[in-house]
Amino acid sequence: MLASVDWHVVWVRVAHPDHAFFIALTRTVYIAVIAQIMGVILGLLAALMRMSKLRILRVLSGIYVWIFRGTPLLVQIFFVYLASNQLLGFTLIPNSLNGGFFKLDGAIFAGILALGVNEGAYMREIVRAGIDSIDKGQMEAATSLGMRYGLAMRRIVLPQAARVIIPPLGNEFNNMLKNTSLLFTIGVYEMFADAEIGYSNSFQPTEYFLGVAFWYLVLTTVWTFIQAGIERKLAASERGEELSFRERWQAAWNPARGGIFMRSPSR
Image (cartoon, rainbow, N blue to C red; front, side):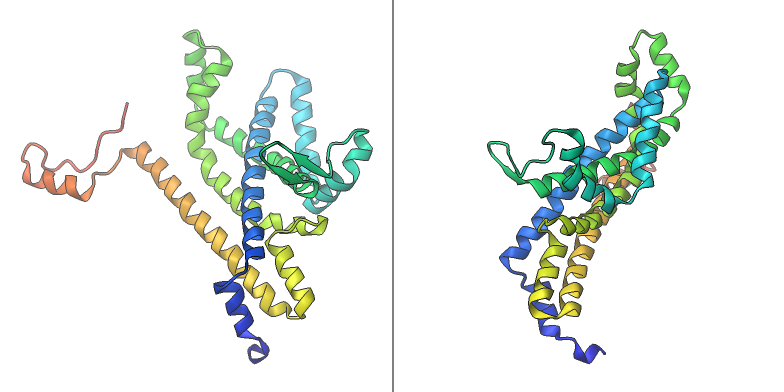
């Protein structure tokens, strides 16, 4: 019953989180960001391999997607953290990673790697669909003008494909924020781990998990607004940017501009 919930504890977790929680929150965000960037890069490479004329590259791209979309993410996380060093015969996952100006725990590094590689398998299909949505005549026109394939892809195809790629990419990042909670299982101190430790010490699961659910909702809601803003910008640049209220007011008093309520699309 709701009466049995200690709402004071929930309020403290929501409105007055401690320093340890903010460390966990920060870690959740930067793990998600780095893993998503890695996933986008791997997805782009895998998509280009899938479109290659070389059969071996197409096969490797297909195997990559088959493995990482066909096995549970939790299994992949444990495999990277616990089994990759033994399988490869060298230390892929160190106890800690020292980059000079930063130091990263081995479990965090393994978690980022597992999340990023898994995400790349999903991003491959998103990137491929975005590239396929662009008229092939544009690539043919670019190559006929002397552009190399790679240059035409970077300057002509990918900028246009980005309009198709960004909406599902935003949804993937939303999922990534939530998937970071799985890293608790290998000892990464992120938001879910903070709630689990608090619950273990107080035996108040409802209060602590309500609190962490609230903060996951905050992160995903903030990102939803950011994503919506990006999509509006892309849509505006595609159809022609709308005039501001001040420009509309000036146009109303200027006969030469009266009736013009949209800027022409930039060429």
